Length: 268
Image 1: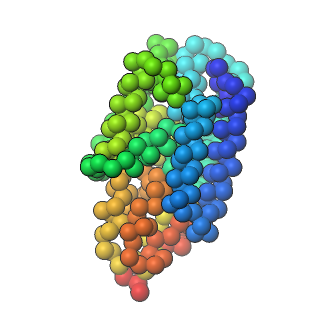
Image 2 (image 1 turned 90 degrees about the vertical axis):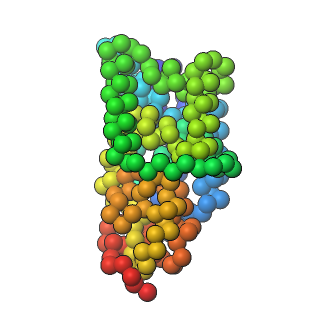
Image 3 (image 1 turned 45 degrees about the horizontal axis):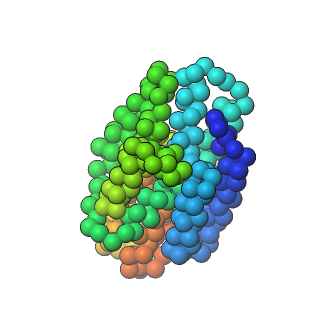
């Protein structure tokens, strides 16, 4: 996304994210999106983060805030705002495809969580949402009021550019936490996740229960964010497929528009 120190090579990441956002939604809809494809895209997204530092929307959002705090305006601000708005619109339409497997920051956390080890489920959604808003406000105040980039302090760019520094070690620590706790950066620190969470809560296409659901509760136990409940809005659904993989009933969980699921439970 255009911004300070923006390189034309970074546009490759933006185009990649846009294409595979739409392609991913199509494959989900056609029931062709597999766990193997998901992991492949996670690896590609992570590599893009290391190679061209794109598409890293959290950092670009922070750069946008720093520009606003510095009183600068122009093409870079407009382009950054349009880019973020585009992915928000796509999230509203098709769910959190970008957060799931296209964001390099989310990808490295997801890959870290796949490392064998004890998993600590943290499903306190209200508490995490409040914490996310507090961090978001801090990022805004630090950027506009003090021209300080919180994500820079946390080593986001240093990690992906392999620059050994204190910040690099901080983000590496976040990744270590990711082995045990699901996506701590995405669920608490990421500034754009504030908007993606709201967009996903009202997304048109999402994972929905159908009348085939027998309410066995297996999906709810498997969901790392606690979003598989019958009344959950899927605002924190990262489309990880864990709920579908443990579901014992065929077609009890489907990805699609309103009206395709959400029927009475207990159907055969």
